[in-house]
Every structure is written in structure tokens, then in C-alpha cells.
Image (cartoon, rainbow, N blue to C red; front, side):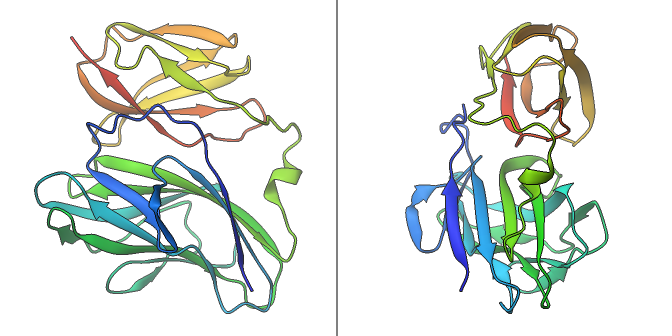
Length: 240
């Protein structure tokens, strides 16, 4: 029997700008945008999954699909299910579902990341992104899989626990400080087309970087810790 544990990361997201909500079927009142899930299961389970839904709250029609990026991968059968199919994402570091679904305002769709253990113990850490038809990231969620007692986090040489790495001010105009990021971390800023537009090393726990070369708009930023762990992506808004 699979066991779901939910670990919620504090995220400075902007609900007024959000176009979707991610929630778990068994607890739809809890919005999981930007959250981290730990999914536990046994080697005899047919599948290890979390049964999510994506709801359109944009006020108009939106077209969505899903992308999965491996933080720590595994060779077990790796799938992403939507309203129509379960797509195999095995043996590729980054995978995007081929078909899109158009949601009217207030409509929800199936979003079920899962593994098929086939009798083997394993662990994995994946970042999942809900994207629109242009590839713009609407929101993200991280899932840590633990099957048969395996735990990928235990294989990381240095564990950074209870970190609350966030950018402020956010929205910003010109510069931003990354709070609580361990010295030696790095940050990458990605635009709406999925292109990396800025990379920087963080030399202190409160490092400030200049953003004057970037245009106003919505971006994502990802922080990579010195131990190689990549934190879930978060929104960054640059204003005039």
C-alpha cells in the first residue's frame, strides 16, 4: 500500500497572477503549487503515483501539457498520465508530453506522475512543470519517490534541511537578493520561452545580483545547492 507524505515548501508565489491550481484528489482544498511531495511505496505495488489535478483559474481558456525534469533519475518505468493516456518518459533527462489539453475556466484535468517498480527498490527526485502551448511554465511541483525503503536524499553528501531560499524583493526592478542560499550555490533565471537568460554564483547566504539587463516580465529562477541538489523553480517578476 503506497503512503503519501506531503512536505510543503514556503514559496513566494503570486496568487493574483496564477493561472492554475495543482491539488491532490484526496484533499482538493490544499493547493500544492510549488510544493514538494514525498511518495512512498513497496516493490510489489503495481504503480507508485500521486493522483493530482490541474485546475484552470485564469478566467479564460488555457491549453496545458506537462514536462518532467530529473533531479536524481532512475531506470524504472517512468510515466506521466493526463486525461487521455499515460506517456512513457523512461530513459530521458527531460520529457514533455506530446498532447495538449484545453481547459475552460474552472475546469480540471488529470495530472498523475507515476513509476512502475516491477519488483525493484529504487528512489528518484523529479521536477514536474505545467506548461502552456507556448512552453511558458505556469507552475511546478517536485516529487521525491521512495520505493522499498530507498531514499535518494540519503545519497547526497551534505543535506541542507529546512532551507527557505527565496528572492526578494519580488516583484523587483533592477536587482534581487537570494535569502538563505548556502555560499557556493548557483542561480539560473529562465524566461517564458524556457531559455536561460542569466546564471550567477551565490557567494554568501544573502547574495544580491543585478537584473538590469533583463526586460520586465515573469521569469522562473532555480537555485542549485553546493551538494548538487536543485531546488524547485519559483517565479520571479521584474517590473519597470
